[in-house]
Every structure is written in C-alpha cells, then in structure tokens.
Image (cartoon, rainbow, N blue to C red):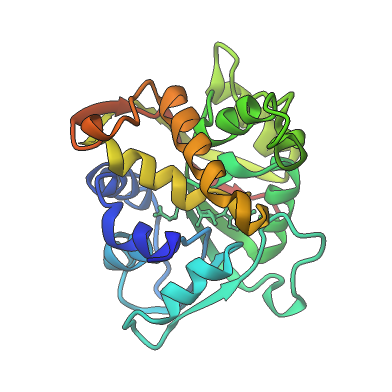
Length: 275
Ligand SMILES: C[S@@+](CC[C@H](N)C(=O)[O-])C[C@H]1O[C@@H](n2cnc3c(N)ncnc32)[C@H](O)[C@@H]1O
C-alpha cells in the first residue's frame, strides 16, 4: 500500500480534534448569501476535506479546490467519490508563481496541519494572498513551536548516509517559539498582508496506537522518494527509529500496538486579506 493510501485508511485518530478546531474557526465566519469558492491547501488524502470541512460549510458553495504538493496524495483524492463541485490539483503553496487561473479566485482558504511544513512561511502566505479575492478569508490550523518531522530530519542530517538528503534541515528552528506565539503570529501575518481576526492555541491530547503516530509522519516523509531503491529499507528503519525518538515513543515491534497519548501544540487562525 502506498504511504498516501495508508494515510487515508489508517490515520484517523486526529479527526475528533480537527473537527473541534474547524467548528470553532468556521463558526466565526459570516458566510455570504451568494455562492462562494474555497481552496484547501495541503488536502493530503482528502479525508479532512471531505469528512470534516465540506460538511461544515454552508451547502451553497460554488467550488472547492484541494491542492497538495504530493502527486501521490492527489492521486488518492481523485479516486474518492465526491460532489462534482470538488476538484483536486497537485500544487506547491510555496511555488515561485501560482497559476494565473487561480489568482484572486477564492473567497476562502482552509488548511489543516500543513503550514508548519513551509520552508518559507512568508512565501506561502504571499501566495495565499494572491489566491484570495478582495476581503478573502483564511482558516488555518498548524503546529507551532515544534515540528517532529523536520526535527527528525535534523537528527538524520548527523548520519553521513542521510546527510545529502537532509542537509537543508541541519540548522532547523521551528516558527513561533517565542513566549507569545499569538503576538508573533499577528506580526508575521500583518507583514504578509493579512489582518488576524481571531487566533487561539489548542493543546488537546491525541490518543492512538504507537504505529498510527508513526504512520502519520511516515506518510508525510518528503525525502523517501529521493532515496535510492537499494537504500530505502535501511532509510525506513532509521527514519522510524529517529521519528519515534523525537516523539518520545518506542518503535520496537512489541510496542507498536500500545495506546499512547501525545500533544501537538497547535495554532488556529482566522485571518482576512487586507485590501
Ligand atoms: C499532515 S498532512 C495534512 C493533510 C490534511 N490537510 C489533513 O488534515 O488530513 C500535510 C499535507 O500537506 C502537504 N504539503 C506539505 N507541504 C506542502 C506545500 N508546500 N504545498 C502544498 N501541500 C503541502 C503534504 O503533502 C501533506 O499531504
């Protein structure tokens, strides 16, 4: 099974927390009477978009476009049965130039657990700004203060064999590590042409089996596809061991089915494009 399909089938433990956060964020929107358009950035294997986001939207939306940097994730999304107003496109939110057809096209941008993966958050926000219509709004959920995947890459960059693939993370420092992450966020969003209408932190626990936490980050592994075939097995072993270590878990076979509780400090933002 591909990592993307595994993500769709098995990584579901985060859904109740995501539903709570999206309900809170979307409850703050004064929805227009006319049909409106939505882009979901980093839609992954589509489950959150289809099972949580779409049911929480007023039914008169005109279109939802889900984008993801991973073609594998988009391929999974395209196999799902959806409303004909929903489509999926492979696209990097940090790419140099966004397609002309998407400029000023969306009333809303949503994004769940994606922006902490941005190498250049300013560029990602700049592109979000271009995608939105005048007065367009964003509802975003992302990790702050730590990023387990990039932390694992940082540790892997100390291993000679994996350094060529992980070098860019050797000095990785997460965003929003100050004492007042919401103030830091407000400034960053302001600089990028957004007014923060509301923001909040979420520290709810996530409970699942060890192997599901590992599967979540395994599906997000941005480097795996660049590893030569004959090294992939060794890479996967090292990645799982180091990822488990970063998460404070044990990747030993006898521990994989143990139920554990983890915390992923999260920021929720409702922001508006400044005119
Ligand atoms: C943790 S998953 C979240 C997926 C989905 N939003 C959810 O909540 O289940 C993060 C997703 O963001 C995508 N992603 C990471 N960086 C991205 C970028 N620069 N542009 C678009 N998608 C990106 C990854 O490929 C992955 O599918």
